[in-house]
Image (cartoon, rainbow, N blue to C red; front, side, top):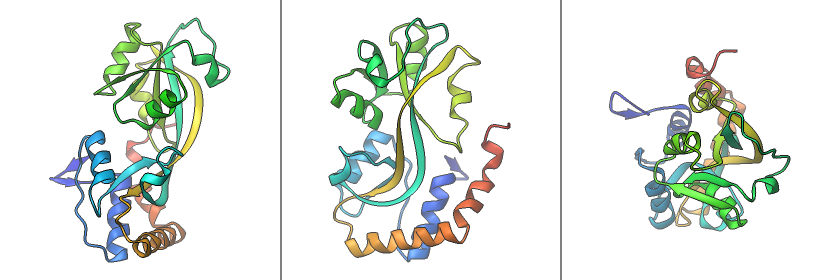
Length: 209
């Protein structure tokens, strides 16, 4: 998010501290996901976060992290008639995703019926209007995303279908020595409590138990 003209947030603050400690000149921009991802694939000395590290993406980037972990979750309408015990049970159903999303790529590569849109939040209304049967999202322990997406019980969690680590994904032009240094510095931040301190600064944004 942008505050006082400056990108901030859990992961942005971690990336800023990482780059400062590593002595790396940098510029952080907030861009639409697909554009940011394509730039990191295409442009030298460019990275994108927070990027799901999947087998399909492994060779595209050099990886720093993990900076977080996430669960991939299928949401459905409350009162849906189908039962999902495994992901395979969702094969006949229409699954909403968005362009460039790792979940959509994962499902499409495995032959599932994926309906991708430009704006992920439009899947919320598509689900309620029965234009899709399921919506593939990612959720983290430090996020209140489910509170925002389920609309007071109109939409419900159906199945966790994958667990993925999130990374800073860097264009292959980034030197190996720099990637190694970034990983070393990041582990030092984890060990000295810097990552936890950043998380605590945003506790007021997390759902209350």
